[in-house]
Image 1 (tube, each protein chain N blue to C red):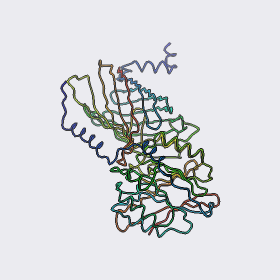
Image 2 (cartoon, each protein chain N blue to C red):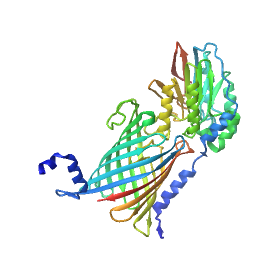
Image 3 (cartoon, rainbow over the protein chains, first blue to last red):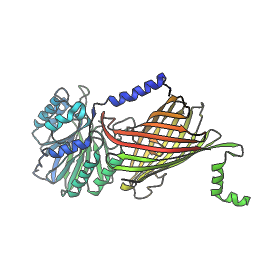
Image 4 (cartoon, rainbow over the protein chains, first blue to last red):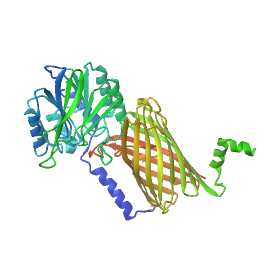
Length: 272
Length: 240
């Protein structure tokens, strides 16, 4: 059977193959999930006044060549009520072992506990092996005083069946009055020109319904590098802008989430 | 009897469906059916059954409703009402407006979309490009009402489809590959891109068999891929 292929179609096929090959990671969230459960889980932390405290959300640090000056500068903005820090993924720019080590060193220098999530950049070029060795599991659930903290692995934009079942079980079993869930991938598109958003809304809606049913207070996210806040059916969905360094003189932000008088609220602050 | 005919909308509709001409207006009818399965990494598998009817008046005006029923791990139903104008300025170009309702019954969430888009159709290349103005309805009311536009969650995406087809010695065979985030009764997120093999075998001038097989990876926007979905659909098309 003769097949005539003209130049245009050759280019089209070439483009498709190129797109498929030009990916920095092809991974399996189910495999990471099960490996995470087998790793030592982050310990719960106690809080002096579990009904009045604050914690920090930062995201998309993109530590590269062992440094991120914005992350380093951020440390001076911590206040006495900040009990811990949450970093929701893209800790490194391209999954390099040295950058994971540098991230840990910088975070430890702040002197308060921190919890880390995994992002798509952390998986690049085989980054999962370094992440699980130097950072820890990508999926876990722990507590800080009266607060349940659940970290999801959405680094490749899907959570998988096993992790979804695990999330449901964790939410069913929680007894703490406050609860946050941390995901690297943002759930909603911030602007029409942005491509950073989930592949499949069916997973997102399934998780949203779980959050409503089991009364999650905040869902902390990153990935898009664009600040976005929505309150939908009583749940706060907060995406912070990135701490990634693009240029020398730029403003960067973090969120302080405060638990006080039975409520959880957030406020955005500039680093500089 | 003539008066009874005019009073009966079903008779009028049936008459139009089998007519090739009404007064001097040329009618072209196309019926599409397809069935298959979809496998989803998070939810398992489900059946997919779709139907589409297209009416083209005088080679230009298009009206096409469609329906999708997908029972399985999460029952998804969808239907759309689409209108359009073919051969806009040039033969290959057309413009469309699609109203789409997709209901995820397991979680009581529905999406109502308004999708204006342009289409290009040539012998070996097809392309669609448009916008999806999507309103998400968290229920419980009006989940199946296509024109319900709540403000709970409103997002806007680009929708697109590009397909390239090879020439075969047998002109009845049309086989190619496509990339798309929109289908008959489905409009996905911007990066919910399906990479498909699309084939049509024209048995007669009126009847064709169709095959569509595709995979949708997750994580394209983050350059960190994982398997998300795979589907295979077999169908038939009949043209009057």
